[in-house]
Length: 432
Image 1: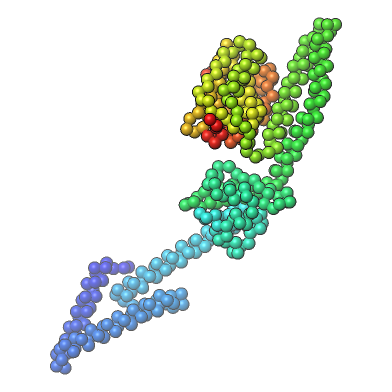
Image 2 (image 1 turned 90 degrees about the horizontal axis):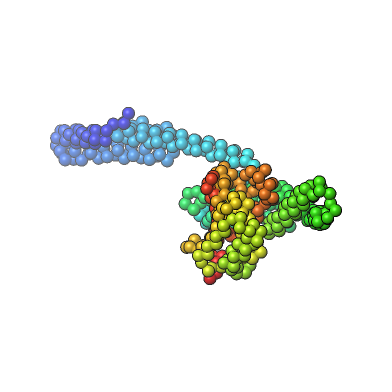
């Protein structure tokens, strides 16, 4: 047990005093008092230097030597160092064990993990990362990852600082391999980068898109023929009365199928490229006026349509796509707003950018449905949607159009109080 430092000092002083007294007695005996005191203190100093030398030698070779057999303060120092050494060894073994467990666990992961410093240089990576990116252990530590994965989009992704979304790239030109990167910031500007091989998913997605596009294109011609014959039959004066209702229902369903095919082709066209849209200047005020006129021409005075234009700012983009997105929102509101209800189209600009909102006084939407509204064919009330003739693709088209224009869709709704769909455009998309 270690003693109190004050006790150590007191004991050391008493020891020096005792040595001095013994030296004085020897000096008196031989007739040289001060020589006796100096000689005894010199002997004590040599003893302390020997203890110090043994202590330092043990510190340098403590893994091969036993601790020196010392008493007093030197014994306490040896005991304290021994305790600290054992504690250090314990924590060292514990850290080594944890590190081995971490290496074993990361080596068994199906995805790659690479740790990057603030300069996006490699600190560590697991075995799967080496397989996916062709990294070499030890040789590539400290190397910038962007210089090893030479894809411009990847370098931009590492440098932007926003890792809320993942990035898919083909790291090697001419090969079908597709990798998905997801950044996870930690510490002081450090980054964990998760790497997944999504080649199979990419191929399946491409096959799905091609199938939808081809099937939709092939269905358009026969549907046009069917719709033409049904239209001719519906105007036939000699058509039996009992066949008129079925013919009208067939016309309605063929029109619905034609709308679905058109929407699928539009989605396929939007998904065919992920490049941001440049486009031209779009007069939003004129666009909203046209939307109101088209809705009145179709629905008459069924709804009260209010247009509020609070800014002359224009949107830079594809006029056809923006018109399609806005019309889908307006058409959606007209389908669900009850007769006599209100539909409001509003355009305004603030410090965050430009905003187009379509609000209605319809039945509203339950909160659990809101996150899935922009999915293809998702319907809150399938039976009602079929009665209204909706394709279930309108909001999916809106989402894709807005993504191509760097915009976002926000949906707010409350059951019994209506809904509001707002498109948020950044200031970079606005033009005075």
